[in-house]
Image (cartoon, rainbow, N blue to C red; front, side):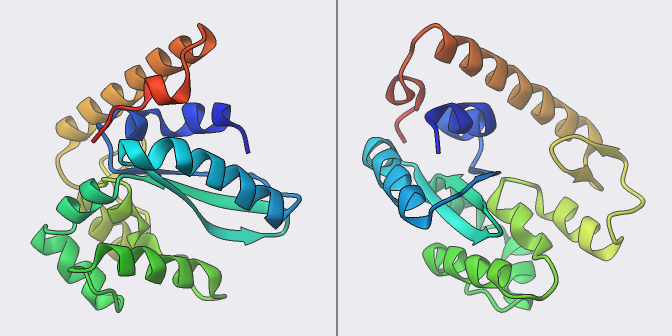
Length: 183
Protein backbone atom coordinates (compact mmCIF):
# COMPACT_ATOMS: atom_id res chain seq x y z
CA UNK A 1 0.00 0.00 0.00
CA UNK A 2 1.48 3.31 -1.05
CA UNK A 3 1.73 6.60 0.78
CA UNK A 4 0.13 8.09 -2.32
CA UNK A 5 -3.14 6.31 -1.44
CA UNK A 6 -3.04 7.80 2.03
CA UNK A 7 -2.52 11.30 0.61
CA UNK A 8 -5.33 10.85 -1.94
CA UNK A 9 -7.88 9.47 0.50
CA UNK A 10 -6.89 10.79 3.94
CA UNK A 11 -5.63 14.36 3.54
CA UNK A 12 -8.21 15.90 5.92
CA UNK A 13 -7.16 13.43 8.63
CA UNK A 14 -3.47 14.07 7.97
CA UNK A 15 -4.19 17.81 8.20
CA UNK A 16 -5.93 17.38 11.55
CA UNK A 17 -9.35 18.65 10.38
CA UNK A 18 -11.08 15.25 10.35
CA UNK A 19 -11.01 12.36 12.82
CA UNK A 20 -10.63 9.59 10.28
CA UNK A 21 -10.88 8.43 6.70
CA UNK A 22 -11.55 5.08 5.07
CA UNK A 23 -10.36 3.73 1.77
CA UNK A 24 -10.12 0.43 -0.01
CA UNK A 25 -6.98 -0.86 -1.68
CA UNK A 26 -5.75 -3.99 -3.41
CA UNK A 27 -4.26 -6.56 -1.07
CA UNK A 28 -2.54 -9.51 -2.70
CA UNK A 29 -0.71 -10.49 0.50
CA UNK A 30 -1.72 -10.01 4.14
CA UNK A 31 1.98 -10.17 5.03
CA UNK A 32 2.86 -7.31 2.64
CA UNK A 33 -0.07 -5.24 3.90
CA UNK A 34 1.09 -5.73 7.49
CA UNK A 35 4.62 -4.63 6.57
CA UNK A 36 3.31 -1.56 4.74
CA UNK A 37 1.05 -0.57 7.62
CA UNK A 38 3.84 -1.05 10.18
CA UNK A 39 6.09 1.19 8.10
CA UNK A 40 3.38 3.85 7.83
CA UNK A 41 2.54 3.67 11.53
CA UNK A 42 6.21 4.16 12.46
CA UNK A 43 5.98 7.48 10.62
CA UNK A 44 2.48 8.52 11.65
CA UNK A 45 1.89 7.31 15.22
CA UNK A 46 4.37 9.88 16.62
CA UNK A 47 2.25 12.52 14.84
CA UNK A 48 -1.01 11.24 16.36
CA UNK A 49 -2.36 9.02 13.57
CA UNK A 50 -2.93 5.27 13.35
CA UNK A 51 -3.55 3.28 10.19
CA UNK A 52 -5.37 -0.05 10.55
CA UNK A 53 -6.90 -2.67 8.29
CA UNK A 54 -10.55 -2.91 9.32
CA UNK A 55 -11.23 -5.77 6.96
CA UNK A 56 -9.30 -7.84 4.43
CA UNK A 57 -11.37 -9.88 2.02
CA UNK A 58 -11.32 -11.04 -1.62
CA UNK A 59 -8.03 -9.33 -2.47
CA UNK A 60 -9.07 -5.96 -0.98
CA UNK A 61 -8.33 -4.24 2.30
CA UNK A 62 -10.50 -1.60 3.96
CA UNK A 63 -8.07 0.80 5.63
CA UNK A 64 -8.90 3.19 8.46
CA UNK A 65 -6.56 6.12 9.10
CA UNK A 66 -7.56 8.03 12.22
CA UNK A 67 -6.57 10.24 15.11
CA UNK A 68 -7.29 8.35 18.37
CA UNK A 69 -7.40 11.58 20.40
CA UNK A 70 -9.97 13.12 18.03
CA UNK A 71 -12.05 9.93 18.09
CA UNK A 72 -12.09 10.06 21.88
CA UNK A 73 -13.42 13.62 21.72
CA UNK A 74 -16.02 12.72 19.05
CA UNK A 75 -17.29 9.90 21.22
CA UNK A 76 -18.06 12.26 24.11
CA UNK A 77 -21.08 13.45 22.11
CA UNK A 78 -24.23 12.16 23.83
CA UNK A 79 -25.99 11.23 20.56
CA UNK A 80 -22.91 9.38 19.34
CA UNK A 81 -22.66 7.50 22.65
CA UNK A 82 -26.32 6.49 22.59
CA UNK A 83 -26.11 5.29 18.99
CA UNK A 84 -22.95 3.26 19.60
CA UNK A 85 -24.32 1.77 22.82
CA UNK A 86 -27.41 0.63 20.89
CA UNK A 87 -25.07 -1.40 18.64
CA UNK A 88 -23.17 -2.95 21.54
CA UNK A 89 -20.19 -0.60 21.68
CA UNK A 90 -18.63 0.78 24.86
CA UNK A 91 -18.33 4.46 23.83
CA UNK A 92 -16.19 5.43 26.83
CA UNK A 93 -13.45 3.15 25.45
CA UNK A 94 -12.60 4.39 21.94
CA UNK A 95 -9.95 1.70 21.32
CA UNK A 96 -12.51 -0.99 22.15
CA UNK A 97 -14.97 0.74 19.81
CA UNK A 98 -12.50 0.41 16.93
CA UNK A 99 -12.06 -3.30 17.71
CA UNK A 100 -15.85 -3.74 17.84
CA UNK A 101 -16.18 -1.95 14.49
CA UNK A 102 -13.63 -4.37 13.01
CA UNK A 103 -15.65 -7.31 14.33
CA UNK A 104 -18.87 -5.93 12.87
CA UNK A 105 -17.21 -5.35 9.48
CA UNK A 106 -15.76 -8.86 9.44
CA UNK A 107 -19.05 -10.54 10.31
CA UNK A 108 -21.38 -11.59 7.52
CA UNK A 109 -24.13 -9.35 8.92
CA UNK A 110 -25.43 -5.96 7.86
CA UNK A 111 -22.91 -3.20 7.08
CA UNK A 112 -22.26 -1.15 10.25
CA UNK A 113 -23.54 2.29 9.20
CA UNK A 114 -22.50 3.67 12.57
CA UNK A 115 -19.05 3.74 10.96
CA UNK A 116 -19.80 7.39 10.14
CA UNK A 117 -19.21 8.24 13.79
CA UNK A 118 -15.59 7.09 13.32
CA UNK A 119 -15.22 9.47 10.35
CA UNK A 120 -16.38 12.81 11.86
CA UNK A 121 -19.89 12.55 10.41
CA UNK A 122 -22.41 14.39 12.59
CA UNK A 123 -24.35 11.95 14.79
CA UNK A 124 -27.70 13.35 13.53
CA UNK A 125 -26.64 12.50 9.96
CA UNK A 126 -25.52 8.99 10.89
CA UNK A 127 -28.81 8.41 12.71
CA UNK A 128 -30.75 9.98 9.82
CA UNK A 129 -29.04 7.64 7.35
CA UNK A 130 -29.87 4.58 9.47
CA UNK A 131 -33.47 5.58 10.22
CA UNK A 132 -34.24 6.65 6.64
CA UNK A 133 -32.54 3.73 4.92
CA UNK A 134 -30.23 6.15 3.08
CA UNK A 135 -33.25 8.03 1.61
CA UNK A 136 -34.78 11.48 2.23
CA UNK A 137 -31.46 13.28 2.70
CA UNK A 138 -31.04 17.03 2.13
CA UNK A 139 -27.78 16.78 0.18
CA UNK A 140 -24.84 14.47 -0.47
CA UNK A 141 -21.11 15.10 -0.18
CA UNK A 142 -18.72 13.01 1.89
CA UNK A 143 -21.86 11.67 3.59
CA UNK A 144 -25.63 12.02 3.24
CA UNK A 145 -26.88 15.02 5.18
CA UNK A 146 -30.06 14.92 7.27
CA UNK A 147 -29.22 17.74 9.68
CA UNK A 148 -27.48 21.08 9.10
CA UNK A 149 -27.06 21.26 5.33
CA UNK A 150 -25.07 24.52 5.15
CA UNK A 151 -22.54 23.45 7.78
CA UNK A 152 -22.10 20.13 5.97
CA UNK A 153 -21.55 21.87 2.61
CA UNK A 154 -18.91 24.10 4.21
CA UNK A 155 -17.15 21.03 5.63
CA UNK A 156 -17.29 19.23 2.27
CA UNK A 157 -15.67 22.25 0.63
CA UNK A 158 -12.96 22.42 3.30
CA UNK A 159 -12.15 18.70 2.87
CA UNK A 160 -12.00 19.04 -0.91
CA UNK A 161 -9.69 22.07 -0.71
CA UNK A 162 -7.45 20.26 1.76
CA UNK A 163 -7.21 17.23 -0.53
CA UNK A 164 -6.26 19.41 -3.50
CA UNK A 165 -3.58 21.27 -1.53
CA UNK A 166 -2.13 18.04 -0.11
CA UNK A 167 -2.10 16.37 -3.53
CA UNK A 168 -0.25 19.33 -5.02
CA UNK A 169 2.27 19.44 -2.16
CA UNK A 170 2.80 15.66 -2.41
CA UNK A 171 3.50 15.99 -6.13
CA UNK A 172 5.97 18.77 -5.34
CA UNK A 173 7.94 16.40 -3.16
CA UNK A 174 6.78 16.92 0.41
CA UNK A 175 6.97 13.78 2.53
CA UNK A 176 4.05 12.25 4.37
CA UNK A 177 5.66 13.30 7.65
CA UNK A 178 5.84 16.90 6.43
CA UNK A 179 2.18 16.76 5.40
CA UNK A 180 0.96 15.27 8.69
CA UNK A 181 0.02 17.82 11.33
CA UNK A 182 1.14 16.63 14.76
CA UNK A 183 -1.64 16.25 17.23
